[in-house]
Image 1 (cartoon, rainbow, N blue to C red):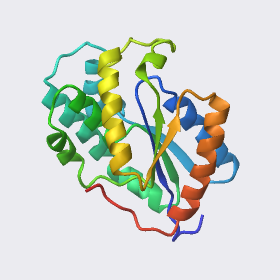
Image 2: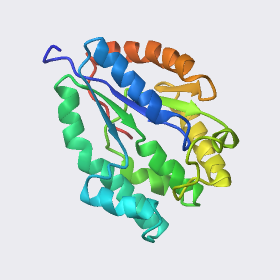
Image 3: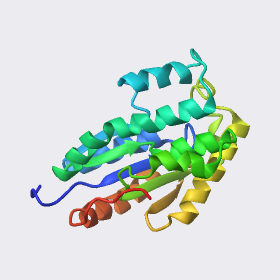
Length: 211
């Protein structure tokens, strides 16, 4: 890719078990197959020092206050920002499974204040597109291994979904909502059309920041 053309930052969001990881992988394979320099990442990044603490928490092996774990999730994103920015500016499209919006949605669902939760995310790289896989949490309980991690509880996931809906309405200029109940193939086909446009449109644009 031309040195002055950057990659796109594409984020997948949605409730647990909505199919983000599958669609992330399929989009990666599609773009790579079309010659687009692409990489995948996800949050939390459990490979870092902070990510290791988060991993113990998510697996119910460690207790932390809601405020502390929220700030750790945010710090986990911040510790990756420089490397992601470097990749984007080098022309690599980055596909990310979960981002700042998940951090806020899950913490607000626990009862924390929305503005307090959003504050540490301000200044992170702004995605060129968020692909929101929307589903009713009741549908997702039948999917494999549901309930193994801390947040996979039906009432809680309903609250999380409401916060994602709020983001989707507020940031409709770059949030794209897809019905997660569709077949994998149908969902992938819809996402692919939007993603290819986003990659082309983002190449000439400066990177933005969350505000």
